[in-house]
Image: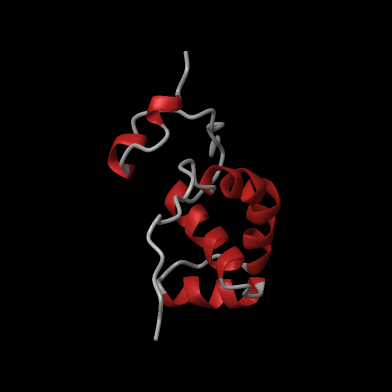
Length: 100
């Protein structure tokens, strides 16, 4: 099936389609996937240290060690980053703007 007609759907509709993303299994993990995603996102997005991520999670009431964040990043980091890449190419505006 050709998915070219689905590439530029709004985000709320993209969630219903699988664009070849691999499903990440969180079996045998104590914390829910949202916590794992948030910890990995904090580490990767803001280039924080593992101990900084640990401190931020403690402020939110989650007692997670920096070693756990490190292991999560090693295990899930590539897959989460791969799934976060944009599926719709950004289009360049045909209008030229001159700033005077």
